[in-house]
Amino acid sequence: MSGGPKVVLVGPMGSGKTTVGALLAERLGVAYRDTDADIVAAQGREIADIFVEDGEDHFRDLERAAVRAAVAGHDGVLALGGGAILDAGTRALLRDLPVAYLSMGVEEAVRRVGLGAARPLLAVNPRKQWRELMDARRHLYEEVASAVVATDGRTPEEVAQAVLDALELKAA
Ligand code: S3P
Image 1 (cartoon, helix red, strand yellow):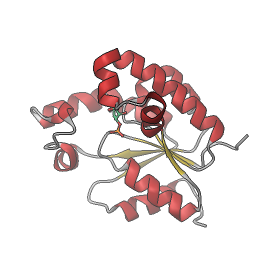
Image 2 (cartoon, protein in one colour):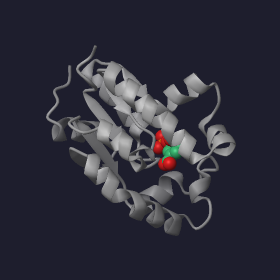
Image 3 (cartoon, helix red, strand yellow):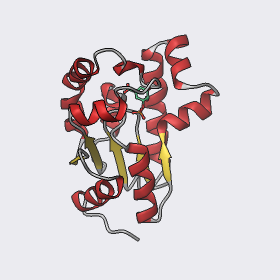
């Protein structure tokens, strides 16, 4: 049994969930966990391969199961994949948890992920792609969030501190 995660991080790809999550775990003296990594470990294949081989719907099912397991069994910092909030069942699992949404404006997003070959979603016309992605997701991030923390122009340390302040958490 566990009391549930101390912090859950949501937000789009490149918003710093992994880096900020690791820093928060260190500051709070707890473990860091990431549902993307849980899925890769359980499946023995990369997320891109799951998308190609089985489709996004199947990936979202795996992701919901990974979030359910982590919410029940992890009491540290938990980071979710950027699209996890698209699934209503996953959103329901986040109800009543301390969820921080790491937000990011379009210019920051393009700077951070626009040219990365590993992020093919934004490879062509990144500003337009980003706006469309966020138009579909912004309200869902906001729906699950207990706190919205802007990351633009901030270092990971500054974002981690802002999350602690917003959720009124004390470092260990
Ligand atoms: C996705 C984001 C990824 C990963 C998958 C889908 C998305 O996670 O879960 O590729 O739909 O935004 P990160 O946000 O950690 O990159």
